[in-house]
Each structure stands twice: as structure tokens, then as C-alpha cells.
Amino acid sequence: MGKHTLIMLTPWKENGQGPYYCPDCALVEGFLAYSPHVREAVNIISVEFQRPRQIIVDLLGAENQDSPVLVLDETQEIPACAQKSLTTGKAFINDPKTICKFLGEAFDAVKPHP
Image (cartoon, rainbow, N blue to C red; front, side, top):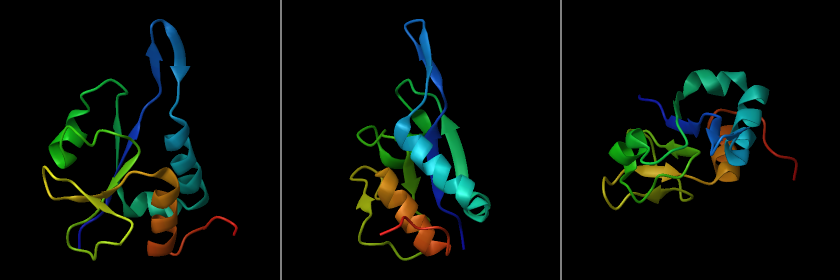
């Protein structure tokens, strides 16, 4: 069985200002801080803010460069919350709350309070 791949942005400077961070990536980082075993169970790749984000383009096509994005392992059942890349056919989740919920359920990790 393979692993899911989580791609997140590194902090960046823009027009001489910053550094900035991605609030959506920070939400996922917070989830991973509460559930360190999930960090070990997925491949995590950091990418620069500037586009094109080539690793994401290679996996999901140029139309799907948002981050954070969880590219799902093809050997596992694809959940209903996932989308499929029209370019590569790979399944992914690119909503940070949905990423956390999916990983929380998949790895018996923390979940948001109802």
C-alpha cells in the first residue's frame, strides 16, 4: 500500500514584504501538530508560493495548483469528498478542512469538535 501525498506552501516574501504564510496550510499544519502519527503516515512535500508549482502540475495538471492539496494514494478507495484531475485522472482533496477531516478519519487522529 502506498501513501497519500500532502503538498503545502513554504513561507515566502513578495514584493519585498513578508514573510507570509498560507492560512490554509497553517490549518493543516495545526492538525499535524496534534496528530504527529499522521505526519509520518503521509508523504509531505513543500513547494514555493510562485507558480507554476511544478510538482503539483505534474501530479494534477496546471489547472489544479492550489495548496494545500492531498493527492490520494491510487491503491486505496477514493472517498466521495475527492475530486479527480481531468488531466491526470488522480484523485485529490484541496480544501484544508476536508483534508483534516479525511486524514483524521483515515488515521484515527484528532477531529474537529462538532
